[in-house]
Image (cartoon, rainbow, N blue to C red):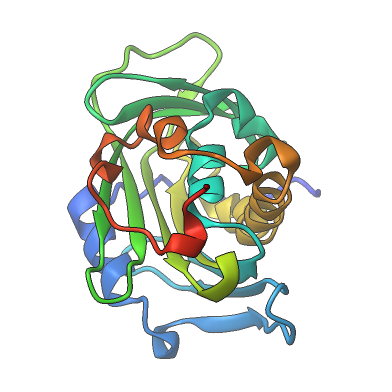
Length: 234
């Protein structure tokens, strides 16, 4: 990657503002197609300009031959973060639905970190489970890491027939510091690589027969939610 010039100061976007922008922008009309898959297991990717920010939001959609619980078990396994989540270096679970995450930097960016809080909800009609995360305060700054200026991630997991799951992933990360202007170059691969890694992990023998308990350790709000029989291990 060539060194970029003309750095801009990071634009700090409030968590509420980004949440509203992502939620309002979930309709296809608001997203520009980057790559449209043809098979159900292909990963379709999209991007969208964000108001008052030089950083774009990115989105990916795919279907995996794995039950919702398998996908949730992968996402809840802190030790597996680096194997599927784009540029994840490590993940440590905290209380109150929070987690401390470290990201590997790509030159010229230094390593980044954030404390994130996740809310888990379910659509009663479709059974889709939404995991919406945003950066919060409360974690002391760590030597060697730059705290991200803004972070919003959203996973929507929809159970399909025969144990398949549709995964929609939306992400907006302003890394802050002096690299906000090249964040789009760094982050445009996030949907493709994240969903590809998540599919491979969820389909592996380790997570294929995952039970609810394995997901509750990170997402306690899952307790009491309904899942189709084809998504519940015998």
